Length: 259
Ligand code: NAD
Ligand code: ZN
Image (tube, rainbow, N blue to C red; front, side, top):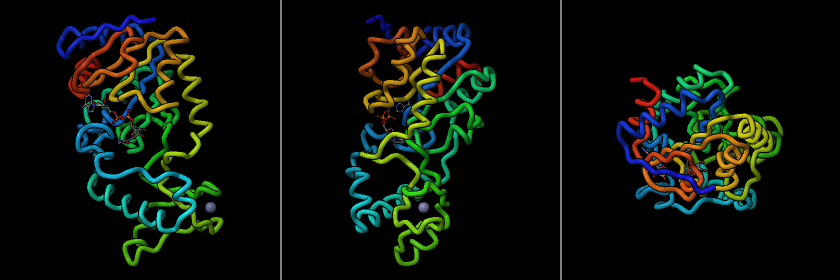
């Protein structure tokens, strides 16, 4: 199945990507942190990225220790401050336009920043594999909690949130932590989209975080064409029908034909 052809940025690769988009009827767009760097949100693995600064807090440690929960809310406060009000960029807008053109297409994202929704992608066309960092949820009963309410207390004297529904002390950013089980319904929807699409495009992902990175490969195994758009090579390049090495906003914006 090794058939990847890598092309650098330029009109040729943009034209090839456009032609893939034009011939597809159901597209699965698989996104990673790379699509949001142009909105000012650092990715994980680039220099200066999140992992250069902190080891992740494992899910079990969050449950086990109040000190860890406090540390996790401190970090959350810091990242939310530094990211501020991030807005969707040209890459997000190009994807939203593709979703508008074809209601059978789907975005499967590893991102937790909520920028696909902010760019106009409807919830029915969006699968969040790693949750969402723009709100919190109770790990016991699932009830949603707003960050604003949590930070109002936390900023005063680092009071930790408890669930207003079930009194649980395990209220956490609604993301999937390391060591936390994958969300069953999101995985099911992602797999269904992978089986149904005729083109999968992985955009801005290092394609090393599993099981998420299985999603575009699964589409390829079910007969879809597979394109990868990323600044640097990925371990899946050899499986792709088209590999474009370039900047996401410029390449995708031109390929889709939006400003
Ligand atoms: P990653 O950091 O491993 O990979 C991002 C890839 O995008 C890298 O290969 C990088 O070279 C490339 N890239 C960055 N900016 C680019 C640009 N403008 N144009 C082209 N390529 C660009 O991210 P991942 O594969 O998503 O996996 C990391 C995990 O990090 C995911 O599980 C995700 O949940 C989490 N995460 C999410 C966010 C977010 O929500 N924005 C941010 C950081 C991490
Ligand atoms: Zn609860």
